[in-house]
Length: 153
Picture 1 (tube, rainbow, N blue to C red):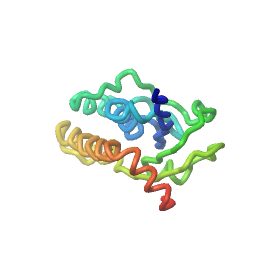
Picture 2 (cartoon, rainbow, N blue to C red; picture 1 turned 90 degrees about the horizontal axis):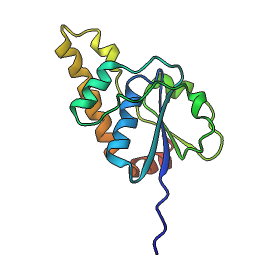
Picture 3 (cartoon, one colour; picture 1 turned 180 degrees about the vertical axis):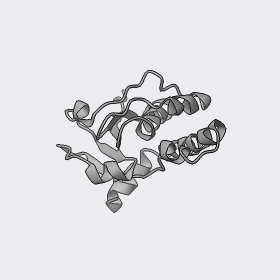
């Protein structure tokens, strides 16, 4: 009889838990729920970004039921990995007790990029690009996490 495979507990951490970390959690739930138990949180809470919800839905991943969470809400979870998805969170990453390995994989900030857009379509294209980059990263899990933690990134 085979024993059930233990899922990796992974926290995706960013500044406000409104966009990039939400997308990463959504992709991990959508694509890797057999191997990963995903969470997301922020150093602050900025609410769920409606454009992130919109572009994720376009790609078939529903994050509309997510909510912006402060990292203090998940500190008692024994994470295997904490993935910082923006430079601010990486620089401000709190100490996680236990064995959590910190891995930094920075992605551009869609709301910041969208400020330079000429119209809504162009703005959403920034969100789509980052969404697709995050999907590509999540598709490489868990191997990419193990490789990054061995390299110390």
